[in-house]
Length: 399
Image (spheres, rainbow, N blue to C red):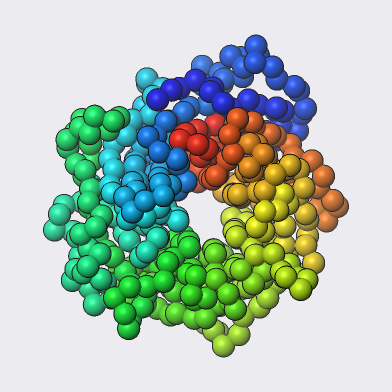
Protein backbone atom coordinates (compact mmCIF):
# COMPACT_ATOMS: atom_id res chain seq x y z
CA UNK A 1 0.00 0.00 0.00
CA UNK A 2 1.44 3.34 -1.00
CA UNK A 3 0.54 7.02 -0.96
CA UNK A 4 3.12 8.08 -3.51
CA UNK A 5 2.47 9.17 -7.06
CA UNK A 6 3.39 5.68 -8.24
CA UNK A 7 2.57 4.92 -11.84
CA UNK A 8 0.51 8.01 -12.62
CA UNK A 9 2.34 10.78 -14.43
CA UNK A 10 0.43 13.94 -15.37
CA UNK A 11 1.13 14.72 -19.02
CA UNK A 12 -0.71 18.04 -19.11
CA UNK A 13 -2.33 20.18 -16.47
CA UNK A 14 -5.66 21.40 -17.78
CA UNK A 15 -8.27 21.49 -14.99
CA UNK A 16 -11.69 20.01 -15.47
CA UNK A 17 -14.12 22.86 -15.23
CA UNK A 18 -11.37 25.46 -15.59
CA UNK A 19 -9.01 26.75 -18.20
CA UNK A 20 -6.88 24.40 -20.24
CA UNK A 21 -3.11 24.56 -20.26
CA UNK A 22 -0.47 22.34 -21.80
CA UNK A 23 2.51 22.47 -19.45
CA UNK A 24 4.66 19.36 -19.73
CA UNK A 25 5.58 17.62 -16.49
CA UNK A 26 8.71 15.63 -15.81
CA UNK A 27 9.35 13.19 -12.99
CA UNK A 28 11.40 15.87 -11.25
CA UNK A 29 8.42 18.21 -11.18
CA UNK A 30 6.07 15.61 -9.74
CA UNK A 31 6.67 16.54 -6.11
CA UNK A 32 5.42 20.06 -6.72
CA UNK A 33 2.35 18.79 -8.55
CA UNK A 34 1.47 16.37 -5.77
CA UNK A 35 0.75 19.21 -3.40
CA UNK A 36 -2.36 21.36 -3.43
CA UNK A 37 -2.94 22.95 -0.04
CA UNK A 38 -0.16 20.65 1.24
CA UNK A 39 -2.00 17.50 0.14
CA UNK A 40 -0.87 14.88 -2.34
CA UNK A 41 -2.60 14.56 -5.67
CA UNK A 42 -2.32 10.77 -6.01
CA UNK A 43 -2.98 7.96 -3.53
CA UNK A 44 -2.53 4.26 -4.24
CA UNK A 45 -3.99 1.06 -2.82
CA UNK A 46 -2.50 -2.28 -3.78
CA UNK A 47 -4.79 -5.32 -3.69
CA UNK A 48 -3.69 -8.98 -3.71
CA UNK A 49 -5.46 -9.55 -7.04
CA UNK A 50 -6.30 -7.87 -10.35
CA UNK A 51 -8.73 -5.01 -9.68
CA UNK A 52 -11.76 -4.69 -11.95
CA UNK A 53 -14.88 -3.61 -10.02
CA UNK A 54 -14.68 -0.02 -8.75
CA UNK A 55 -17.11 2.39 -7.11
CA UNK A 56 -16.99 5.54 -4.98
CA UNK A 57 -19.19 5.74 -1.90
CA UNK A 58 -21.27 8.93 -1.99
CA UNK A 59 -22.04 9.12 1.72
CA UNK A 60 -20.72 12.35 3.18
CA UNK A 61 -20.06 10.71 6.54
CA UNK A 62 -17.60 8.32 4.86
CA UNK A 63 -15.28 10.50 2.76
CA UNK A 64 -12.81 8.95 0.33
CA UNK A 65 -14.30 5.46 0.62
CA UNK A 66 -14.41 3.05 -2.32
CA UNK A 67 -15.31 -0.54 -3.10
CA UNK A 68 -12.96 -2.59 -5.27
CA UNK A 69 -13.72 -5.99 -6.80
CA UNK A 70 -11.32 -8.70 -7.90
CA UNK A 71 -10.99 -10.32 -11.29
CA UNK A 72 -9.71 -13.82 -10.61
CA UNK A 73 -10.30 -16.64 -13.08
CA UNK A 74 -11.88 -18.78 -10.40
CA UNK A 75 -15.11 -19.18 -8.44
CA UNK A 76 -13.66 -17.47 -5.36
CA UNK A 77 -13.41 -13.69 -5.74
CA UNK A 78 -13.56 -10.75 -3.34
CA UNK A 79 -14.83 -7.23 -2.87
CA UNK A 80 -13.03 -4.93 -0.47
CA UNK A 81 -14.06 -1.63 1.09
CA UNK A 82 -11.11 0.75 1.38
CA UNK A 83 -10.97 4.20 2.94
CA UNK A 84 -8.31 6.90 2.78
CA UNK A 85 -7.00 8.04 6.14
CA UNK A 86 -6.54 11.73 5.44
CA UNK A 87 -4.07 12.19 8.29
CA UNK A 88 -1.70 9.36 7.37
CA UNK A 89 -2.36 9.51 3.63
CA UNK A 90 -2.75 5.70 3.59
CA UNK A 91 -5.60 3.56 2.33
CA UNK A 92 -7.02 1.12 4.85
CA UNK A 93 -9.16 -1.92 4.09
CA UNK A 94 -12.14 -1.57 6.43
CA UNK A 95 -14.10 -4.62 5.31
CA UNK A 96 -14.35 -7.33 2.70
CA UNK A 97 -16.58 -10.15 1.52
CA UNK A 98 -16.20 -13.21 -0.64
CA UNK A 99 -17.93 -13.04 -4.03
CA UNK A 100 -18.77 -15.95 -6.34
CA UNK A 101 -17.05 -15.33 -9.68
CA UNK A 102 -15.66 -11.89 -10.60
CA UNK A 103 -18.23 -9.14 -10.01
CA UNK A 104 -19.08 -7.59 -13.37
CA UNK A 105 -20.20 -4.37 -11.66
CA UNK A 106 -19.81 -2.99 -8.15
CA UNK A 107 -21.83 0.05 -7.07
CA UNK A 108 -22.56 1.86 -3.81
CA UNK A 109 -26.09 3.07 -3.14
CA UNK A 110 -26.41 6.73 -4.29
CA UNK A 111 -27.24 8.10 -0.86
CA UNK A 112 -25.12 11.14 0.15
CA UNK A 113 -27.26 11.98 3.19
CA UNK A 114 -27.32 8.44 4.61
CA UNK A 115 -31.10 8.13 4.46
CA UNK A 116 -30.90 4.42 3.61
CA UNK A 117 -28.89 1.42 4.81
CA UNK A 118 -25.26 1.47 3.70
CA UNK A 119 -25.45 -0.89 0.71
CA UNK A 120 -23.25 -2.20 -2.09
CA UNK A 121 -24.77 -3.88 -5.15
CA UNK A 122 -22.89 -6.40 -7.28
CA UNK A 123 -23.68 -8.39 -10.40
CA UNK A 124 -22.27 -11.69 -11.64
CA UNK A 125 -24.32 -14.85 -11.48
CA UNK A 126 -27.03 -12.93 -9.55
CA UNK A 127 -27.81 -9.43 -8.34
CA UNK A 128 -26.66 -9.17 -4.73
CA UNK A 129 -27.05 -6.44 -2.12
CA UNK A 130 -24.51 -6.25 0.71
CA UNK A 131 -25.11 -4.34 3.94
CA UNK A 132 -21.98 -2.61 5.24
CA UNK A 133 -22.17 -2.57 9.02
CA UNK A 134 -25.22 -4.84 8.98
CA UNK A 135 -26.06 -7.69 11.34
CA UNK A 136 -26.38 -11.32 10.31
CA UNK A 137 -30.15 -11.10 10.72
CA UNK A 138 -30.18 -8.57 7.88
CA UNK A 139 -29.49 -11.36 5.40
CA UNK A 140 -32.91 -11.77 3.86
CA UNK A 141 -31.74 -13.60 0.75
CA UNK A 142 -33.24 -16.92 1.76
CA UNK A 143 -36.62 -15.42 2.67
CA UNK A 144 -37.43 -13.78 -0.66
CA UNK A 145 -39.58 -15.55 -3.19
CA UNK A 146 -37.36 -14.18 -5.97
CA UNK A 147 -34.11 -15.23 -4.31
CA UNK A 148 -32.17 -18.44 -4.65
CA UNK A 149 -31.59 -20.17 -1.34
CA UNK A 150 -28.75 -22.12 -2.91
CA UNK A 151 -26.80 -18.91 -3.44
CA UNK A 152 -27.67 -17.23 -0.16
CA UNK A 153 -24.65 -18.57 1.68
CA UNK A 154 -21.96 -18.24 -0.98
CA UNK A 155 -21.12 -14.64 -0.16
CA UNK A 156 -19.48 -14.68 3.26
CA UNK A 157 -18.21 -11.47 4.88
CA UNK A 158 -15.36 -10.83 7.24
CA UNK A 159 -15.95 -8.73 10.28
CA UNK A 160 -13.69 -7.93 13.20
CA UNK A 161 -10.82 -10.35 12.68
CA UNK A 162 -7.64 -9.42 10.85
CA UNK A 163 -6.96 -11.46 7.72
CA UNK A 164 -3.22 -10.91 7.71
CA UNK A 165 -3.25 -9.52 4.15
CA UNK A 166 -4.02 -5.87 4.71
CA UNK A 167 -7.49 -5.96 6.32
CA UNK A 168 -7.60 -3.72 9.37
CA UNK A 169 -8.27 -4.92 12.89
CA UNK A 170 -11.86 -4.24 13.94
CA UNK A 171 -13.02 -3.94 10.33
CA UNK A 172 -16.69 -3.35 9.56
CA UNK A 173 -18.88 -6.45 9.10
CA UNK A 174 -20.50 -6.78 5.70
CA UNK A 175 -23.44 -9.16 5.31
CA UNK A 176 -25.40 -10.42 2.34
CA UNK A 177 -28.79 -8.69 2.51
CA UNK A 178 -30.46 -9.87 -0.72
CA UNK A 179 -29.76 -12.32 -3.51
CA UNK A 180 -32.08 -11.68 -6.43
CA UNK A 181 -32.74 -14.07 -9.30
CA UNK A 182 -34.52 -12.62 -12.33
CA UNK A 183 -35.38 -16.10 -13.66
CA UNK A 184 -38.72 -17.05 -12.16
CA UNK A 185 -38.72 -20.50 -13.75
CA UNK A 186 -35.30 -21.87 -12.85
CA UNK A 187 -33.05 -21.68 -9.83
CA UNK A 188 -30.20 -20.26 -11.90
CA UNK A 189 -30.25 -17.14 -14.04
CA UNK A 190 -28.16 -16.12 -17.04
CA UNK A 191 -25.02 -14.18 -16.09
CA UNK A 192 -25.54 -10.49 -15.46
CA UNK A 193 -23.19 -8.09 -17.23
CA UNK A 194 -23.89 -4.83 -15.39
CA UNK A 195 -26.19 -2.84 -13.12
CA UNK A 196 -27.13 0.76 -12.49
CA UNK A 197 -28.70 2.20 -9.34
CA UNK A 198 -31.32 4.89 -9.89
CA UNK A 199 -30.12 8.12 -8.32
CA UNK A 200 -33.56 9.65 -7.78
CA UNK A 201 -35.15 6.50 -6.35
CA UNK A 202 -32.62 4.18 -4.68
CA UNK A 203 -35.24 1.44 -4.47
CA UNK A 204 -34.73 0.89 -8.23
CA UNK A 205 -31.84 -1.03 -9.79
CA UNK A 206 -31.60 -2.01 -13.44
CA UNK A 207 -29.55 -5.03 -14.57
CA UNK A 208 -28.45 -6.28 -18.00
CA UNK A 209 -27.89 -9.89 -19.01
CA UNK A 210 -26.41 -12.04 -21.75
CA UNK A 211 -29.88 -13.55 -22.31
CA UNK A 212 -30.91 -10.33 -24.20
CA UNK A 213 -32.99 -9.03 -21.28
CA UNK A 214 -32.90 -6.14 -18.85
CA UNK A 215 -34.61 -6.30 -15.48
CA UNK A 216 -35.70 -3.42 -13.27
CA UNK A 217 -35.88 -4.37 -9.60
CA UNK A 218 -37.51 -2.77 -6.60
CA UNK A 219 -34.78 -3.89 -4.22
CA UNK A 220 -36.60 -2.76 -1.09
CA UNK A 221 -39.48 -5.11 -1.87
CA UNK A 222 -37.19 -7.62 -3.64
CA UNK A 223 -39.62 -7.66 -6.54
CA UNK A 224 -39.23 -7.34 -10.31
CA UNK A 225 -40.78 -4.11 -11.61
CA UNK A 226 -40.39 -5.15 -15.22
CA UNK A 227 -38.30 -7.46 -17.38
CA UNK A 228 -37.99 -6.92 -21.11
CA UNK A 229 -36.14 -8.24 -24.12
CA UNK A 230 -33.91 -5.25 -24.79
CA UNK A 231 -31.66 -6.35 -27.66
CA UNK A 232 -31.29 -9.03 -30.31
CA UNK A 233 -28.11 -10.31 -28.64
CA UNK A 234 -26.32 -10.03 -25.29
CA UNK A 235 -26.93 -6.83 -23.33
CA UNK A 236 -23.68 -5.47 -21.92
CA UNK A 237 -24.62 -2.33 -20.01
CA UNK A 238 -27.52 -0.31 -18.65
CA UNK A 239 -27.65 3.30 -17.42
CA UNK A 240 -30.43 5.42 -15.94
CA UNK A 241 -31.07 8.91 -17.20
CA UNK A 242 -32.33 11.65 -14.89
CA UNK A 243 -35.58 10.68 -13.17
CA UNK A 244 -37.06 7.26 -12.53
CA UNK A 245 -38.39 6.22 -15.93
CA UNK A 246 -35.80 6.48 -18.72
CA UNK A 247 -32.76 4.25 -19.17
CA UNK A 248 -30.38 3.30 -21.97
CA UNK A 249 -28.82 -0.02 -22.89
CA UNK A 250 -26.08 -1.28 -25.22
CA UNK A 251 -25.25 -4.74 -26.45
CA UNK A 252 -23.66 -7.17 -28.84
CA UNK A 253 -25.99 -6.11 -31.66
CA UNK A 254 -24.14 -2.77 -31.81
CA UNK A 255 -27.07 -0.54 -30.85
CA UNK A 256 -27.85 2.04 -28.18
CA UNK A 257 -31.48 1.83 -27.14
CA UNK A 258 -33.51 4.11 -24.88
CA UNK A 259 -36.49 2.82 -22.91
CA UNK A 260 -39.20 4.54 -20.88
CA UNK A 261 -40.90 2.55 -18.11
CA UNK A 262 -44.12 4.45 -18.84
CA UNK A 263 -44.23 3.13 -22.41
CA UNK A 264 -42.37 -0.14 -22.81
CA UNK A 265 -44.17 -1.09 -26.03
CA UNK A 266 -41.52 0.86 -27.90
CA UNK A 267 -37.84 1.66 -27.59
CA UNK A 268 -35.78 4.21 -29.46
CA UNK A 269 -32.61 3.17 -31.24
CA UNK A 270 -30.45 6.29 -30.96
CA UNK A 271 -27.28 4.82 -32.49
CA UNK A 272 -26.01 1.75 -34.33
CA UNK A 273 -22.45 0.84 -35.24
CA UNK A 274 -23.74 -0.43 -38.57
CA UNK A 275 -22.22 -2.64 -41.22
CA UNK A 276 -22.78 -6.30 -42.00
CA UNK A 277 -21.06 -7.29 -38.74
CA UNK A 278 -21.84 -4.50 -36.24
CA UNK A 279 -19.25 -3.91 -33.54
CA UNK A 280 -20.63 -4.75 -30.09
CA UNK A 281 -21.11 -1.77 -27.76
CA UNK A 282 -19.80 -2.43 -24.25
CA UNK A 283 -20.56 0.64 -22.12
CA UNK A 284 -23.09 3.45 -21.99
CA UNK A 285 -23.22 6.45 -19.65
CA UNK A 286 -25.53 9.45 -19.40
CA UNK A 287 -24.29 12.99 -18.90
CA UNK A 288 -25.09 13.75 -15.24
CA UNK A 289 -26.00 17.41 -15.90
CA UNK A 290 -27.25 17.65 -19.49
CA UNK A 291 -29.43 14.60 -20.01
CA UNK A 292 -29.56 15.05 -23.77
CA UNK A 293 -26.08 13.56 -24.04
CA UNK A 294 -24.73 10.08 -23.49
CA UNK A 295 -21.49 8.33 -24.37
CA UNK A 296 -20.71 4.80 -25.51
CA UNK A 297 -17.73 2.70 -26.54
CA UNK A 298 -17.34 -0.32 -28.80
CA UNK A 299 -15.40 -3.54 -28.45
CA UNK A 300 -11.69 -3.16 -29.31
CA UNK A 301 -12.19 0.47 -30.39
CA UNK A 302 -9.88 3.35 -29.50
CA UNK A 303 -12.77 5.79 -29.90
CA UNK A 304 -15.60 7.04 -27.69
CA UNK A 305 -18.86 8.09 -29.31
CA UNK A 306 -20.83 10.98 -27.78
CA UNK A 307 -24.52 11.10 -28.72
CA UNK A 308 -27.18 13.80 -28.57
CA UNK A 309 -30.51 11.98 -28.29
CA UNK A 310 -32.23 14.97 -29.94
CA UNK A 311 -30.30 14.07 -33.11
CA UNK A 312 -30.16 10.24 -33.12
CA UNK A 313 -28.01 8.07 -35.37
CA UNK A 314 -25.33 10.72 -35.96
CA UNK A 315 -22.60 11.09 -33.30
CA UNK A 316 -22.34 14.51 -31.73
CA UNK A 317 -18.61 13.85 -31.28
CA UNK A 318 -16.08 11.08 -31.80
CA UNK A 319 -13.18 11.18 -29.34
CA UNK A 320 -10.09 9.59 -30.87
CA UNK A 321 -7.25 10.41 -28.51
CA UNK A 322 -6.43 6.87 -27.36
CA UNK A 323 -4.00 4.53 -29.08
CA UNK A 324 -5.56 1.34 -27.71
CA UNK A 325 -9.03 -0.03 -26.96
CA UNK A 326 -11.07 2.08 -24.55
CA UNK A 327 -12.29 0.14 -21.50
CA UNK A 328 -14.19 2.66 -19.41
CA UNK A 329 -15.67 6.16 -19.34
CA UNK A 330 -17.17 8.50 -16.75
CA UNK A 331 -18.94 11.86 -16.99
CA UNK A 332 -18.09 14.58 -14.51
CA UNK A 333 -20.83 14.74 -11.85
CA UNK A 334 -20.54 18.53 -11.55
CA UNK A 335 -19.96 19.63 -15.15
CA UNK A 336 -21.98 19.10 -18.32
CA UNK A 337 -18.98 19.24 -20.64
CA UNK A 338 -16.28 17.03 -19.09
CA UNK A 339 -15.82 13.34 -19.79
CA UNK A 340 -13.04 11.00 -18.68
CA UNK A 341 -11.98 7.93 -20.66
CA UNK A 342 -9.55 5.10 -19.86
CA UNK A 343 -7.81 2.71 -22.20
CA UNK A 344 -5.50 -0.22 -22.67
CA UNK A 345 -2.97 2.32 -23.94
CA UNK A 346 -2.32 2.94 -20.21
CA UNK A 347 -3.79 6.45 -20.25
CA UNK A 348 -6.79 8.23 -18.75
CA UNK A 349 -7.91 11.28 -20.70
CA UNK A 350 -10.21 14.12 -19.70
CA UNK A 351 -12.11 15.82 -22.51
CA UNK A 352 -13.77 19.24 -22.62
CA UNK A 353 -16.85 18.99 -24.83
CA UNK A 354 -17.86 22.65 -24.55
CA UNK A 355 -16.84 23.35 -28.19
CA UNK A 356 -19.69 21.14 -29.48
CA UNK A 357 -21.03 21.10 -32.14
CA UNK A 358 -17.52 21.95 -33.35
CA UNK A 359 -15.13 18.97 -33.38
CA UNK A 360 -13.30 18.00 -30.18
CA UNK A 361 -9.85 16.87 -31.22
CA UNK A 362 -7.65 16.73 -28.13
CA UNK A 363 -8.10 16.04 -24.41
CA UNK A 364 -7.31 18.74 -21.88
CA UNK A 365 -5.63 16.38 -19.42
CA UNK A 366 -3.89 13.03 -19.61
CA UNK A 367 -2.50 10.62 -17.02
CA UNK A 368 -0.20 7.70 -17.67
CA UNK A 369 -0.68 4.66 -15.44
CA UNK A 370 2.05 2.36 -16.72
CA UNK A 371 -0.49 -0.48 -17.07
CA UNK A 372 -3.71 -1.11 -19.00
CA UNK A 373 -6.53 0.75 -17.22
CA UNK A 374 -9.59 -1.41 -16.58
CA UNK A 375 -11.96 1.04 -14.89
CA UNK A 376 -12.42 4.73 -14.21
CA UNK A 377 -14.91 6.42 -11.87
CA UNK A 378 -15.51 10.09 -11.06
CA UNK A 379 -16.41 10.81 -7.45
CA UNK A 380 -19.86 12.32 -6.96
CA UNK A 381 -18.97 13.64 -3.50
CA UNK A 382 -15.38 14.78 -4.07
CA UNK A 383 -15.81 16.10 -7.59
CA UNK A 384 -12.16 17.02 -8.08
CA UNK A 385 -11.12 13.38 -7.67
CA UNK A 386 -11.30 10.41 -10.03
CA UNK A 387 -10.30 6.80 -9.43
CA UNK A 388 -8.75 4.32 -11.81
CA UNK A 389 -8.07 0.59 -11.59
CA UNK A 390 -5.13 -1.08 -13.31
CA UNK A 391 -3.27 -4.32 -12.58
CA UNK A 392 -3.64 -4.86 -8.82
CA UNK A 393 -3.85 -1.15 -8.02
CA UNK A 394 -6.53 1.40 -7.22
CA UNK A 395 -5.42 5.00 -7.56
CA UNK A 396 -7.31 8.17 -6.83
CA UNK A 397 -6.07 11.41 -8.31
CA UNK A 398 -6.99 15.05 -8.23
CA UNK A 399 -7.99 16.45 -11.63
